[in-house]
Image (cartoon, rainbow, N blue to C red; front, side):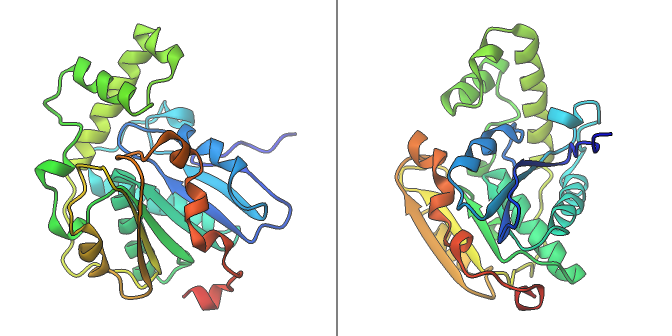
Length: 260
């Protein structure tokens, strides 16, 4: 009898004896799909997993989370489930970057197991709060504006573009994530001991010019800020190979006690 498939921790790459797992959290309106292709570019001894939020992919029959705290609780539980298989690096892009930071804070407060590194991509520091720049797409956008945004950033596969029913589902998912994002509130004092890497695009108008310095103020441990070519999703080639820009994936293996 086949083992039941995990619809929350979606493992698209497994090796026999992995050094670690890259665990990815989704961006606004996204599922696990954009991360699957990274299985071809992560180091050979690294597994790849993406966390599926409620209301999409294999969890499409579940209700969407109603607010940030509800989604963060769900994501934290999922990441801890992924962590049972060994060391991991936690990654989040855009809204997922804030979620990854929040999840890392929660896990540190709970006593672990903490990630070897936290990697935040294309996100301003959450300590400055939810600003107009961070509220994109906007909840007031029309359906066509949201569809245009998803097409522009490669979030709308061709088969969805040609199917009105699938477009409607994509819009429902996007609006559900926007509602959750807009309930985010930074908890004053939240910082991470976990080594923190921030990655931003040099032409991303959403990212504040001092984002690196703001993020550095949230890091109690090692910190680095890397700026890559392109905008919010970099360039297509850089996005496709983004794990290559994460040094933690090739670092010597750490034990659980060393990661604490």
